[in-house]
Amino acid sequence: MSDLPFDRAEEVAPSTYTDVDVFGPWHVTSRRTRVGQASSNRWAVIFSCQTIRAVHIEVLNDISSSSFINALRTFVAVRGKVRQFRSDRGTNFVGATDNKQVEAMPSSGSEILQKEGGFYVECGALDGEESSNSLFFERVRKWNGLLIEADPSNYQDMKSKHRKAFTINACLSIDPYPAMVKFNKALNMGRIVDNSEAKAWIVANRMSPDEVSIQCFPLYSLLLAMNQLTVDFFSLDVEGDELRVLQTIPFDWTPEEKRDDDESVDKEVDENENSEEHVDIEEHENEDNDERDAVIECDNNGVIECVNVEDDDEENNCDVTGREKGSFSAERRSAIHEQSFLPMVFSQDRNSSFDYKAAMQALNEAKVSHDDPRLIRLIQDYYIEPPFLEPYHLDKPERLDPSSGQAPFIDSRLNYMEGGFYVECGALDGEESSNTLFFEKVRKWNGLLIEADPSNYQALKSKHRKAFTINACLSIHPYPAMVKFNKALNMGRIVDNSEAKAWIVANRMSPDEVSVQCFPLYSLLLAMNQLTVNFFSLDVEGDELRVLQTIPFDKVDIKMMTIEYIHVVGKELSLKNFVEPQGYDIILQMSRWDWGVNDLIVRKKGLKHWP
Image (cartoon, rainbow, N blue to C red; front, side):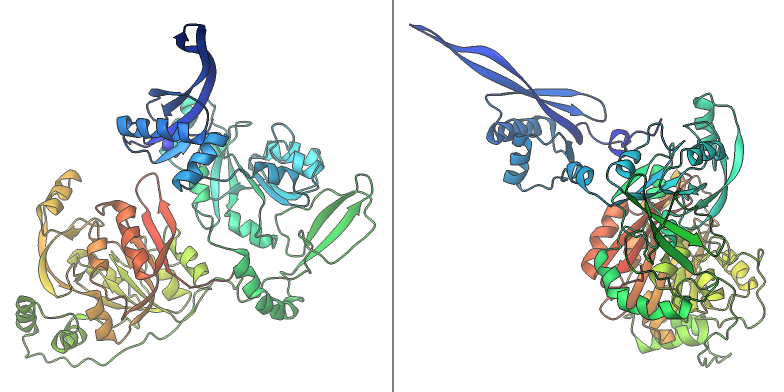
């Protein structure tokens, strides 16, 4: 059984999420007269809280939209504001949404059921027949599709059914990158076992452990492999990991973006027709049932298996949607391997007899502007340290990407760009959970690593990162300042008010304060003469919004950002309300059950990526 929907489990005020329906009528006597009695019908509208199941009932004189609106006003006046209503699409409900100009989700199920020649994806396909959500579309509406089943036993049963669909024995990844995972087989209740919560779920459902190793792929990767980025129907049943799977999908892709890139893709086809990874796609006609069944012949020993087709006699060079065959460019599928490069440098004029700390203290007390030339020169000459030219000294040198999925997602959205520039604030030791090491090692980017904790900073320097580094914090004001910083490994933060001190106590951290110099981000970028940042990673344990508010976005061009939101007052909503007016969209919210990842991925509006 799947988890409860989010609106059934969120801790909110009663009636925040409400079901609504009308029932009746009843024949009632409204009044008595000298010649008899006047009768009429009455209905009732029931409001049911989805969280605590409380019920509120109002009487309706009729089932018109105006009568329902009156009952709705009474309900809201008594019970408070409602964030979301769920209802059927009765005429009175539809009329009320039109009258009040509220957003209603359209009912498009009937249109989907009537459509022919579409494309489906069913994850959790079991044996391909029992409780299948896609067999109707395949047999009746002549759809093509992809069946995904992780359990090897179920997958063999499914293949025996001879479904006219592509199949793959794999699971959908819960991260935006592939992985080999442990999967507990349990007929129709198998699931990924990657944490204690999943193991507890297995015990609670009284299932015997029967684990196998299964390859997982992101859904986006599978669709790219099939050159099929339009899905008419997606059925998802993975026994508890549905939300984590959905969070890996780049929903921002649109057909318009595809058309914009069609011309450039066509130019790249001829260059790749002879490559070993080229995928030939053919279409066959099945004489037995008059269905058009797409077949992919994978020259690269791919894991997606072809549809079952018998007695094929016609061949055309088409893909599953009837377009001319093609392949993605080699650049877009470029191999991931470590590159070697010389990082950029700039001149520093250090005078050993100059008391730069005293000079900095004077600037702190004067609260000079973030673009003050004296401040910029001090940062450049005495605070920023140049990249290491020696070989890396990493704990796990074979690991190219230690991030939790942020790096590959950003990489794809920046079109696998090489030679960019990053800033990572909260860099820790420069390796563990680093969001930027991939870009430095693989994409040959230059960058700036910012770490306030002196202990972490020494560990960072020992890794020999090919980036500029600075032992400082980002200022929460548009001027420099010396602040108190509480050291706590990966949870250190500025302690400048009672709220921050309460946060330290609430997280059971022992006080270990040091004085750390803070600089505005704009000052650091001016010191490096680098006002274009392709990727900005920000993790400062609660002060993210205050840091962002110091950045003059009209002077700095930041393409994409990852922002930790979990400790920010107002969390993701407050960040959303700030970044959108600055010209940014939140395109992905990442979260993990153990709080290890709680990031918003933000992209500048108008920035396009290859589909």
